[in-house]
Image 1 (cartoon, rainbow, N blue to C red):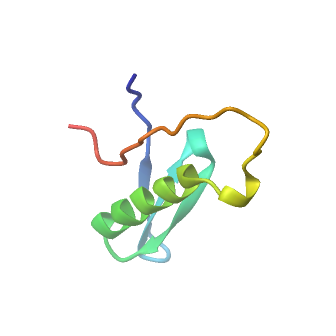
Image 2: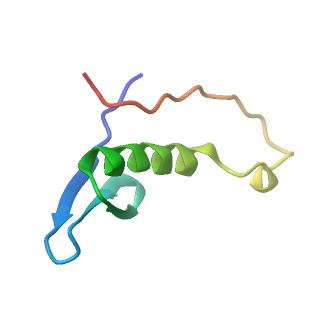
Length: 74
């Protein structure tokens, strides 16, 4: 299964910086000098959000591991 996740980038004229948001994951960030830097930061933020915290895992459940890759779509 494959999905496409929307990431939005916008320039703040007042601060002269680039920002991003990923609506589906409720991620907002940025403040970078270039759009490219905002994109890299966004990819890192998505990966961090999907990574999870092992201390929150329920040991009484059956689980599978899913390999997820975060990269711009072609």
